[in-house]
Length: 555
Image (cartoon, rainbow, N blue to C red; front, side, top):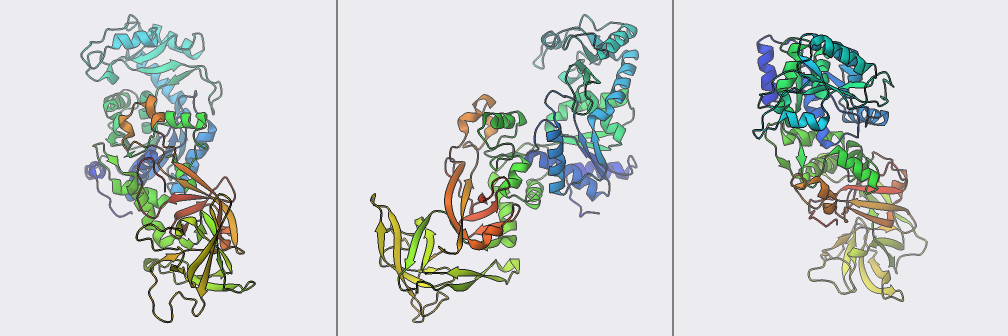
């Protein structure tokens, strides 16, 4: 059994177990396959999966495929891939809401014959007007509310047989028009929809709504605790009503937790789909997207995501978590686990004038100097007369307190020699193309024999022993921290044009030619990077070394 993680949900479960109301905890994650899972989904996955594991119970994955108009096998496959990547494989099995269409239909007929459901001819707009609102406008009964069970059953069967046009009739539960909870004012539980289902084909032209189908599915699978986000709290009375009037019993028990809200992020699947369709992002797995496949492509790990979710906590009150907390979880992990490598993202040539033309020397460089990593291994890095250094490490006229390379100044080449800048070459536009320097060749460990102090250290790669690559620097997709306060029609107004910066012709340590997607590296002084899974020769920056992000800035 897992180490106990206590929150208000586990307190409910502990009480149910102590009372003998349940014997084995059984949870589920019920995503609709109409898009890719995002990091908000990771919270629901973690809560349901980890609680089942903690209590030695079962965890189901159930595709909520009751609305075929936007569902697709592409999304079904991606959901299963994401759960497997997270390590949250469903030990209770994989199910589909469509597996229960016959059961849901049979219960609907029983509700009709019990006088608890009726076929309504009102249009969607008319039904909405009749139901009133939660601001005090009362409901009016539909003119069709008092049809006899026999008439309702006949009409419902004809709905299934395809006799009526889409949207012309619905089946509504007959509950309480005076309820202050709008969900209890005769909610629709079936609608006519001619759409080919990704698994059922054209077998059905009527489909149950989620609020009706979901509790039946939970009960049929033996789910004990249906844990969902806070938006479903007002739906709980309807959930219980469906259970009591179909399957029967006091379980499953629905309980709600606050959704995961993160700064500079939008998690509406409808909007994320729009970003993909507009070509604003490079697919659902664009590394700026909050989708799990996007985070995976960017270089996030399952452990960092679940650590972030766990540290964010399980509560009933909505809050907004700083995205930098997610970055910190990954940074803490990669600081210990990621191998260090040298990469020059904006290269300029450095020529060591007093170094032999054809000589190649190899210096030992630590793979991970972090003591917590316990990694004492080193690798050989080639040193030659011509090197690449980062353009930002040189200034002709240095700003105050600049410690790196400028004419007359001496710096340490990381793990190699001390060099002093002597001159530069420029192109016709006055841009520096080559920097010349001389090296102190008395020692190759960067420690001068006379003990003089050298303040600046810069990284480098050999011009003859490097690989050419593209490095993509990713930042937040949105400039506004609280995107929940922005109307959805204005989301595009807050897209950050600096959320992606592409550096071409970067010069990387030659061993990175063998790097594969899923590998993680700390590029010295540059951040954490991983090879892109879609484009060979491209490295994605997962996160910078420090959290210094400001809206509109990606450095």
